[in-house]
Image 1 (spheres, helix red, strand yellow):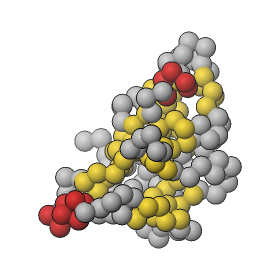
Image 2 (spheres, rainbow, N blue to C red):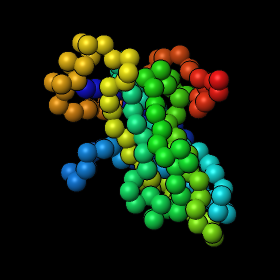
Image 3 (cartoon, rainbow, N blue to C red):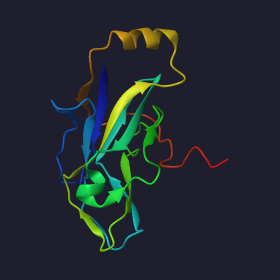
Image 4 (spheres, rainbow, N blue to C red):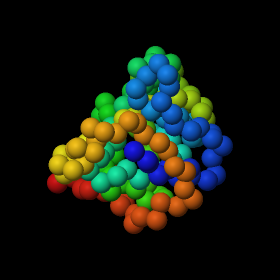
Length: 160
């Protein structure tokens, strides 16, 4: 399965998402320096990428098992779902960080702070499900533009 990926200009991370030999999920890294001064502070950390996930699929984003210990934050909703409609050049993937360290914490550019996997969505057709059975993995294809309409960012599907 090919996933179109756009690296957001203006950041210096250069981190390319990849599946490590010792894991099954794709690691993602902070694309910005973040300082959370106090326990309870929260910020959305840019991961410096936007992606186009094929219709019928979604991404599940979760913290790495060492994130709380190494970086002193948790993801407040435990994990995130990225729908395939979140796929424009400005639909930048982010990791919500809620500081759990009394003295605050710092996240540096390039720190691997979360991970994701692709899975079938509840809207997948029977053909997409069959295709998924024969998929041998994912491949990132870097593009300059995803050429998709802006969905509206985090929380844009509404609260009711």
